[in-house]
Length: 263
Image (cartoon, rainbow, N blue to C red; front, side, top):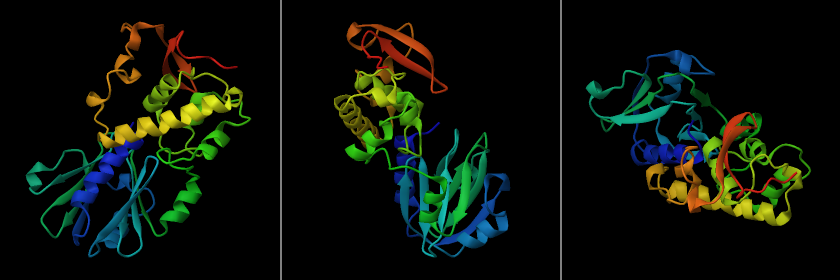
């Protein structure tokens, strides 16, 4: 599932192509992708308007219209935004498309239809309603530490909790724990201030690097655990043993002998 860096890359592409162009028409091929309005209302809310900006909070990407409304693109597992100028290039899994005055099309592609597309009149009210926490790319140290304080949940469960910090998913959570040398099953409330400060800095560093590289994981640093998750692989630095189990309900990898379990 796309995490914060992947969603940010989608947002950047939208900003390059989708802004400041009048929306000529909208075609909805599958209205099941629209979660809070009809296809007719969606088309009416967009046609004749212009996307004037974007906003991202965690894994939620919003495209803001000049009317004051916003379109939420929550990508789910397989959602993506594709751009083309020839209708023959349309994806077979396109659920709707937006035609711009410069001849470009914005197509929303989603083979498994797990994405959520909403037309919102008040973006900020929606963010409050769904209870999104601070964005994980910019969360400050005090808010990060407060998310762990006194909690019996695992460290990984806190990282994945979108109401405490928004944007981290399974892969980046494992990377953060590895680089902070914290076992993902450690009890959140038992982590020291020093450990939390280190985990906070690693969170910012990892997400920023991923964002800077447009979430293209093949060029992530070779010493990232990301590239060594196969159980048969030799761990980065050759120390410890790669382990796998369920933590916080998710398949989780860590290196025994390197990441400290705090109880």
